[in-house]
Image 1 (cartoon, rainbow, N blue to C red):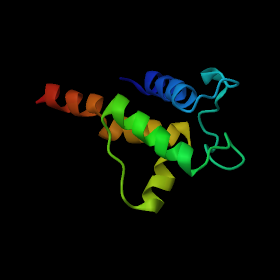
Image 2 (cartoon, rainbow, N blue to C red):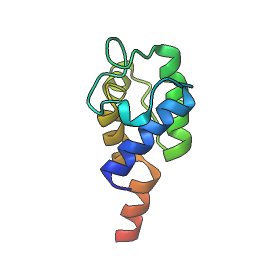
Image 3 (cartoon, rainbow, N blue to C red):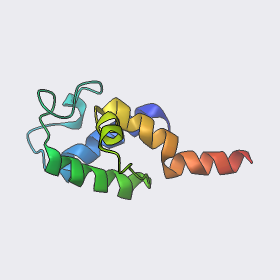
Image 4 (cartoon, rainbow, N blue to C red):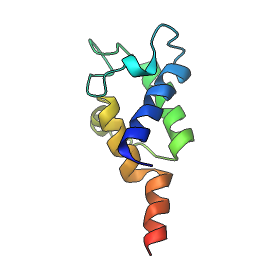
Amino acid sequence: MDRESTTTRIKEIIVSSLDLEEVAPAEIDTDAPLFGEGLGLDSIDALELGMAIKKEFGVAFSKDAAENKRIFRSVASLADHVLAHGQAANADKEAKR
């Protein structure tokens, strides 16, 4: 999975898993903060989003709050994490062996 399709899928997951009926995935700024003045998500949203991302991409998240804050900063940072640690990344690495 490439960066653009990963980013698009993450935006779709944000909208669907958090029931953001008033937001279209294409309206979500890839580099905008997901929390606070950006998309305005809260800690419960982060938990739900983390579970949905884990289910979709098979990625694990750190138990370190600071690391998770960095990962969940934006759609772009989530995509970086998924591409580096997700099932697709692992499958690509296996295929190259």
